[in-house]
Image 1: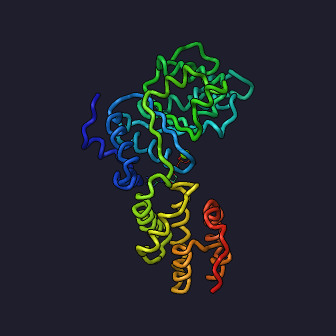
Image 2: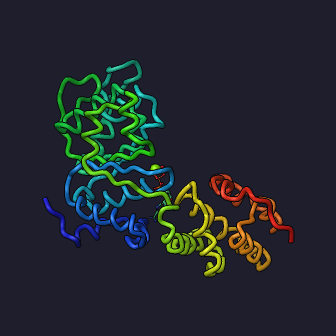
Image 3: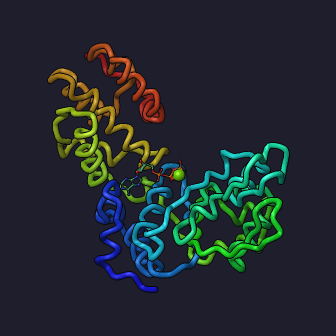
Length: 308
Ligand SMILES: Nc1ncnc2c1ncn2[C@@H]1O[C@H](COP(=O)(O)OP(=O)(O)OP(=O)(O)O)[C@@H](O)[C@H]1O
Ligand SMILES: [Mg+2]
């Protein structure tokens, strides 16, 4: 069943960035955009590969929101976070009495994703026994709840993501080749941010606008010089690292004019560390918590701070 553009727009979640922000202007992301446009209306499985923080989760949300499965739920399952036996029950559900703690019949994520999207994040972490059951789901759309002989049929779009090279995982015997072929129908390789540097200013400005609103701060806009400095960074943590850095700028850099000037020094000279921040004044507990949660930021700046 085809979904019209207006119907798709109606289900687009408000929290997703605009397409221009998601895909930027770099050639690498433009080719991703073209591939995405071609698969949006299909039910083909999509495999998203990329380093941590490149936007795999965001792209999965975008694919769901613009697909014909958008009226159903997008159920994200972090395969690395749930131990194997529990994951089988969480994914496929179980019948009452199927195992010791099964006090009631429970549907799994696959059922909750009916007519929607099942997003299997960190798919490389799926253990081998579950890979077989997942293969069956992808191959003929069927599965069984644990302890249930009734075969169920699923209508769900499967999106997988990984930061590992699945070909290597197959070669090492950790990932089933047949499952790899099943999920590898359409593969989107998200480039690291250092390979799409031309998108850094757009992303930085987008995050600043969002974060100023979120944290009710008055941080000044980035100057051209600051944006150039940001563009030169390595961004080993990719877009997440940039977002975290902008969060710090929005929250801390805009505290007062002195702070702002000093944070500009860092952005331009690449000379920022924690002590340069605390010189701006004590953090509130909330700011400390936010900064801790965003700890990846500290990795950017191991160079000594310039004395003032
Ligand atoms: N193109 C983009 N436009 C706007 N925000 C983005 C973009 N790409 C990533 N982000 C933001 O960067 C952060 C990291 O993105 P996301 O969680 O999707 O990355 P990931 O590849 O799934 O990371 P991980 O491998 O750690 O799970 C999120 O807050 C996301 O909203
Ligand atoms: Mg992710």
